[in-house]
Length: 113
Length: 115
Image 1 (tube, each protein chain N blue to C red):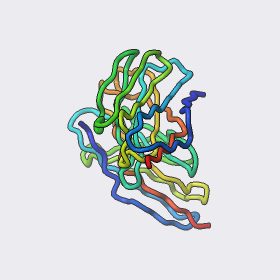
Image 2 (cartoon, one colour):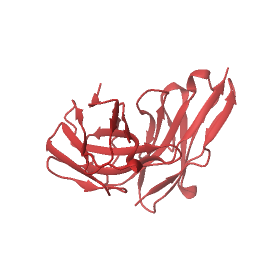
Image 3 (cartoon, rainbow over the protein chains, first blue to last red):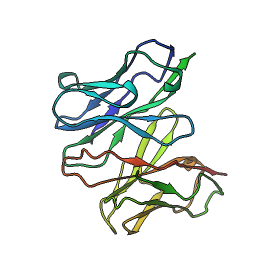
Image 4 (tube, one colour):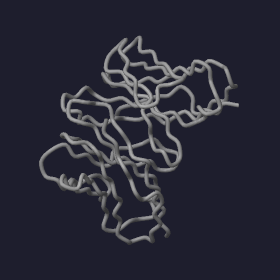
C-alpha cells in the first residue's frame, strides 16, 4: 500500500513569513495527492488536490502545492502566512483505482502574530 | 455542503465494554471510512466500505469491526474496549471514483477514552 512521510512535525513562523511543508509518498504507480488542514477544534478540510495535468495546483486561502514526480514529492507552499493559518496540515495519497487514502503524520504550524 | 455527523463528540467507557461509534452522511456517498488520529501518527485507516454490507480492512483493523446496513450509516464497533484504543476517531465519506481522486469529507470526530 502507499505511504506518506511528512518530515516537519512542528513549524513555528512569524506572520508574513513564507511557508513550505514537505510531503513525500511511496508508491510506484499513478497517484492522487491531497493536502488537508485541521484548525483547532474543527474537522479536516480539503486545501487542494492533484490528480493530473499542471503539477502546480492552487488551493484555498492562498495555498499551493507542486507535484514533482521524480522526487515523489508534493510540498505545500504559501508566500506569506497569517496568524489564522495556525493549524495542523496533513498530506494524503490515494492510488489510481483505489479510494482508500493514506495520511502522513501531520505538521503542526504555529504562526506567531 | 456535505455533512458527516458522528454521534458523540466525547465518550468515556470502561475496559472490556463493547463500544459503538456511529457515523451518518447526508450526501449519498458510496464510500465511508473510519480512522483513528493519534499525536505524531496522523490518521490511520481502520476499516472502509465501498457499498452497503461491504467492508474492507484498513491498516489497523485488530480489535475493531464495522457495520454498514444502510448507505448513509457506517458504525465502528470496539468488541472489547482496551486502554490502547483511547484515541480520536474520525469518520469520512466520499463519492465513488474510478480514478481514486474523490476527496473525503470528515466528521468532527469522537474523542474516546477507555478507563
